[in-house]
Length: 115
Length: 113
Image (cartoon, rainbow over all chains, first blue to last red; front, side, top):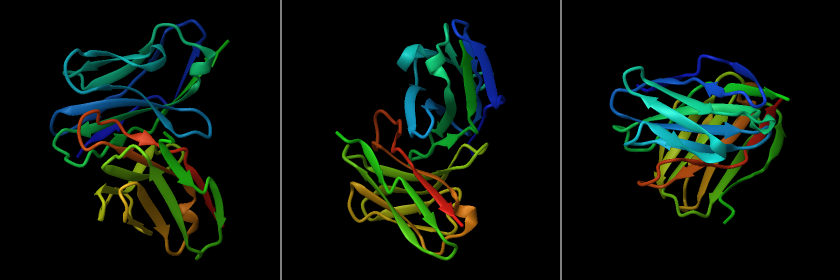
């Protein structure tokens, strides 16, 4: 069974400071990993994914994430946060052995960026 | 492209009433999913479909039924609504292979009183 943990319910950061949102995962096989962002009263928007290859993946809006197999982590990062980055962020994992593309989502981390 | 659309956007039901949520996608995706989102619990998979006429149970299927008669549409039904089904419902779709990410609709906010 696959699972995702986002250990922080909320992350507070000042505008211009680095932003990190943590994610760890557990799968029986190799993982596909995803980050999504949700703005208030909206659906989830895809940010980035790790499928294979370079452990550092770059995505939309200046976000990046680093895949660490030994620590089973996929933390989301942004070098300089903006107030507009305030949103709910979800990490998700898909086990490669799952043929039906099902994702397991974390509980979400609320990011609050203050001016 | 409209992407993934959901109707209705909001609905209030009384306990015991029934309703159907409609999801439509115009990206020719093979896979479609229904999730519910509750505070502090992330998204939980209700049912999913891997093609026209094929559906399967997800993590929390009880009290829901689905149908996929056409490739572009995925319907979620509540036969007898309960207050525990008060939630925000999201539909998503994805390709059979390739990019793997799921594309989400805007959601339906359902309240059962």
